[in-house]
Image 1: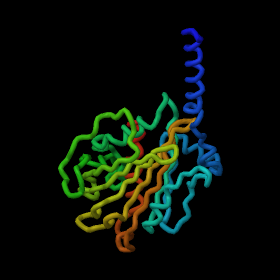
Image 2 (image 1 turned 30 degrees about the horizontal axis):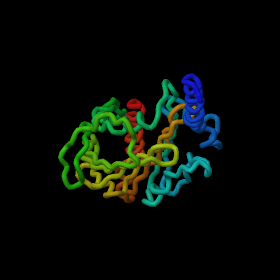
Image 3 (image 1 turned 90 degrees about the vertical axis):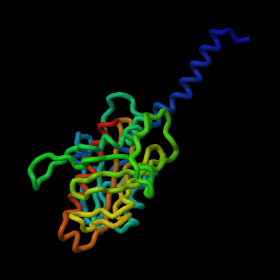
Image 4 (image 1 turned 180 degrees about the horizontal axis):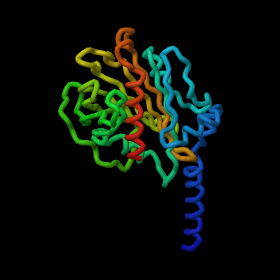
Length: 259
């Protein structure tokens, strides 16, 4: 019959065996993006990360390996976007960061309010979103508070957001958070048209951003593709790639700071 000390030793051994995969299962960046050149990789690990713009028919340049199981481009390309923005960033480890930290950062919608971007027209930093709040639903747009920090991550969740955009005015989005593969996928799309000076520039459902987060051996991966479908006339009047890039940069900064 085993004594108490033996049971403790066996319990510790079992705990180490079971915990081992949890600490070793994080993949490396090079496993996911093996073909990225050294200069691009250096930018990925810099504070601003790597952001690239392209026309809708241009090839994507930041695709992960086929064996990674990560595919965030398909939902964007299905929209037949006229312009695309790709982003890739690794947040270095300062302490252990898991799904719960990422999820709680994504839930703090009000922290988007007042985040600055550089306006080349005004040559100054100004708030991109003057207001940011969750709303109940597309039919009931009453503001509701952000959820308190969660202790577990749901398999999937949908929330609705209203942003008062400095250029597009009141903008309405649906955000879907789902566990995917070894990461979290955050999908953002507009459920109302985006307008500039009262002129619709991006129709309902024609803007989509996919953000994928995964804890890696080196830190937290932030991988994103955003796209929008606009008419040639709108494209000639508004620099849509620049507009998407600025908003993607602000959204990434919001999540990075939250994490």
